[in-house]
Image (cartoon, rainbow, N blue to C red; front, side, top):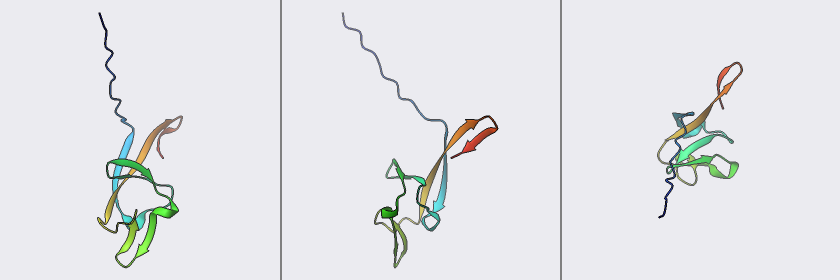
Length: 79
């Protein structure tokens, strides 16, 4: 007889998502882009005629910034 082990999906509950304008992006920020978490690098940001472009796209103008809530001795800190 075979026994199957089910892998459970772990959902991170320490994520804090905030919608910001692309013009407020800084290098090193973590953002959600096309459903995946991505770190903003120097090569990702470009100034174009339509404003700031992230990964070659100037639209949409808003993007979801992701921060992590980390418990410390002095309380919860967003990083």
